[in-house]
Length: 292
View 1 (cartoon, one colour):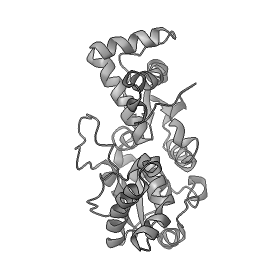
View 2 (cartoon, rainbow, N blue to C red):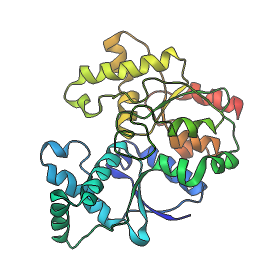
View 3 (tube, rainbow, N blue to C red):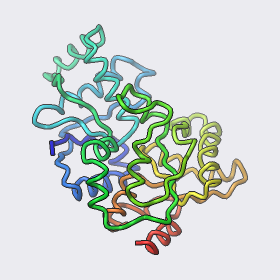
C-alpha cells in the first residue's frame, strides 16, 4: 500500500483530539502507511476567503507543497480542511491566473506543488484504497443491534470529486454496513449543522442542529456518525442548548466514523476516545458490549 501524508488540521490537535486518536489507531491497525505532514499550517478553513481569496488559496497550497513525491498524497480527516485543500489544488491545476499567483506566492518561500499530488478524505482512503472487503475481513466485533445515522455535513460531498454524489453520497453508509450495524436511511445526512455560525448567529445554528437531531431521534438512532470535527462539536456540545431552545430532550451520542470502525476492528473504546464526548455514550456502549 502506498504512503500518505497525514494532515490532521487544527481541530484534530484541539477540540477533536479523539478523532485524531481514533484515526491513527484505525490506520495503524489496518497497516496504512502514513506520517504526519511536517510543519503543516492552518488551512484557513472556510473563514479566510471572506478576508482574502488569495490567502485562502495560499494557506492550503503551502500544505500541498509539503506533500506529494515520496511523502505521498495528502489524507485529510476534517471536511473543512478537505474543501480548502481541494479548492487550492483545483485552482493550481487549472493553470489560470490563480494558479500563477499560487506558484508565485509559494516561490517566495521556496516551495512548489508536486503536479501529481492528490487530496483524499480519510473516509475515501478506507472505502476505496484499503477496501470494504479488507475491512470486513479484519473486523472481529459485529455491531449488530446498533442503529447508526450516517451524517456527512454539507462539505464532504460538495467539492468536485469523481464518484461522489453532491446530495446523496454513499461512502459512509457502505463503510458502516461492513461493521454489521443497522445503517439508517438518514435524509438529513448532507444538511448543514451551522458550523461557525454557532459563534455569530447561535440561534440559527441551534435550529439547524435541531433539525438533524430531530431526525436522528425520530429514527431511534443509537448514535450519529460523522466525518467532520466541526459537525461533531456542534451536534454534541450544543445539544443542551438545542434542548433549551426547542424544549426537547435529545441525548444522542455523536461519534466519528473512525471510532465506529475501530470498535468493529476490536479496538478498545477508551483507546478510540469514546467517552470523551459531552453527550454520554453509556447507552451506546452498553448495547455495543452486549453484542460484542
